Length: 442
Ligand code: ATP
Ligand code: MG
Ligand code: MG
Ligand code: MG
Image (tube, rainbow, N blue to C red; front, side, top):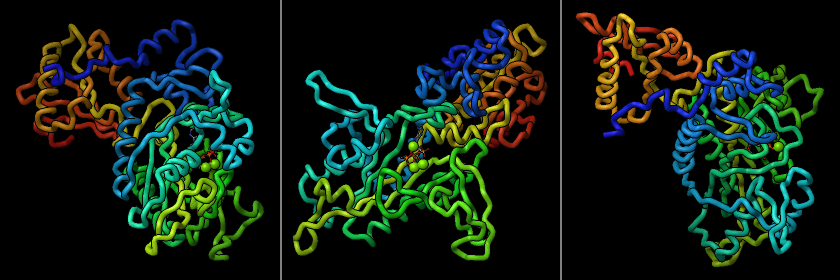
């Protein structure tokens, strides 16, 4: 069956290799498009490798490899959100101006809001976030029962923001994917429990991805509310400045605290150090700000309507992808968190006409044995069939693109005791293993 075949590199819509050749032809070296400012590592690597392609400022085509990584990330997020009771929905991106006027954010958001009119002259914006929409949805469904709370609703959709400075590729786009969750609770105490549960789910998510992420006290900005934290990945390229206490672990975005602070306001003694960070997640306890305006309420035990307590919780999906590449990659080789790598394994058959030519068939066989032994590898294996290129050249490509495992079927596969050369990109380890050994290792 066709599903039992590996994907061929020559067929991947990821024109990295072609592009390198074309760029060399154009005299651009390993750069991307002429005139494009290669502002940061993840942006440069993603462009060079054909993971993304620019359309207009802050907007990118997400090419198939990126979509694979994104779908993996979304599945992990789904698992965490549903693990704490989240239910997934999907809200329209076209949001009526009326809703935004009621919350007063139509004016407050200023130029960041993409505004448009329909054929009747009715005004809309392209949703940059969905507090208004979700609260209105709840209110439109009539009063909830206290038994239905906490209610956690989330979506993964495109968000639109007319950023003053879109830059750094997927790190700051004008159109990007966000996971946004909204919670409804009976009282402040319950809302704090929900808030805590979401923060813990975020912490678990970043731990599973193997990314260092710091939870810092944050400003509530135009979203409003009373309590807020950001999840920040420390990185030089980050646009946020964080203060972290070496003694008690207190950490805050510098936007919230006295800029001149030298000693920790929490434990008083600890010295604060400054780090730059990429904001990948943001949690807000909103209180009744939106539920009051839109009358989102529930019936309590005495059957009396009470305004619900809300929280909202964002994760920057496309930003997390770029941020992981930013912090894990070297200057010329992409590295993904293992759970997000678009493909797990790249098999390299020998060069055509080389001494090891016959090992080519073994590559196909290796693929079959692998997916039979580990069915979850189906769809995760690519075979670099560009056998007009040397193994060395293709190894270099594979290393640049960051497949977690590269398996070479070369001379050693033709010996009496056939072995395959298995390179683990994340550990840098190279082993010669018989076929069963490869299965066990992976
Ligand atoms: P920033 O401070 O970077 O502008 P924000 O505070 O405006 O972000 P939130 O409103 O808190 O963003 O949105 C939730 C999450 O969405 C952010 O934590 C971030 O991960 C992501 N995000 C926000 N703006 C962008 C953008 N322009 N491009 C990509 N991701 C974004
Ligand atoms: Mg912003
Ligand atoms: Mg921010
Ligand atoms: Mg924020």
